[in-house]
Length: 250
Length: 211
Image 1 (spheres, rainbow over the protein chains, first blue to last red):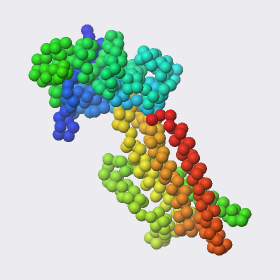
Image 2: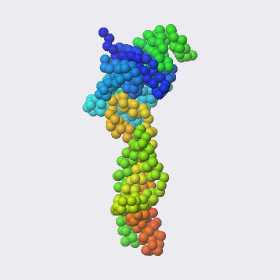
Image 3: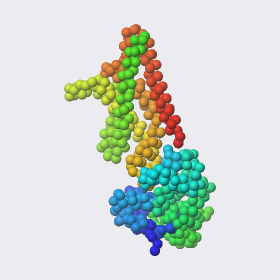
């Protein structure tokens, strides 16, 4: 029996009078990768931000690994929200590293402050993650001394250091040059090979096709079409999906 | 001459007392004012805004006179001149520091707060370890500017009869029929501010390890 890691039912969200998410439902099982594509303003980032608790949903129900974050728009107690928050990790488009901390401290700070790990334990974890990101020689550097691709790898290491059960990526390569993009995609691919449960919001269609088990196309706050990535990208049924996919071929 | 210098050192001590006490109280108080200025409660925000407008919009010399004399005329309460100087300076400088803090706080990208939230940091941890250090780096130049001004503003304490450095120099000048003591006082202020600037340079350099 596959374990359900994310179960969203009828999520809705408005900013003022603007409805940005309508009745969004999907689920994600353990070890699977879901990619979400769609034009800017389609609500995909907002959806990610609701699941990672940066925004509050107005309605619907969301369960993370069987724990209910909100039901019919009513949120669980603050403590429960916090506990659920520890199951998820988020990698931002703009990295959001802490500029005044070294690379090492960027990765150890939350381990120590939130998970109460010892300094030695946190650093050991950080060094092993840095090695994996091929950044072992950058531990003492500051974010301003790194390239965009290196910064994004540090931010992935920072998220992984807390051992999240599900990792979310919000357009992780949109702020990067094409060459640097490849580095990040390789990292995500290797995580997928290790059966990390992930949700990736991306414009990299080929990449999404290659690594994800399921894909969703969103527009105007709706899930317009979903299915296995190869058929969604190669034989889209919906007219809007067709147009969107085609626009990337040109 | 030696006696004059001793008198002026005495005045300098008073000036330095005003300087240090004002900083001790107004640096933290300014922070509370900044928080009020950014409050979501519009009444609180309005009151704090008005306070800042008054402090920035009227002369400090007038504020000194008001703080010292108003309690006497209104409720017949009179108090120590030196205390009045500190109260007036703290009220005035808190308003200026508040605006500097606000500019610093508002310059921190939203993403820093979001990263903290996603990583699970508490609000206190977020503020003291992530936000505040970055704010300090950004406001240091404008803070230095304000602190240098404070050194010179201490000369206004004489308005309500506290004999600080400049008053001492003026008295000596009229006694000696010479402007020389005034220029000596100028050298004293210059030296004090030279030290203040060097200290700010030092801290700015210390924080220049990142961008």
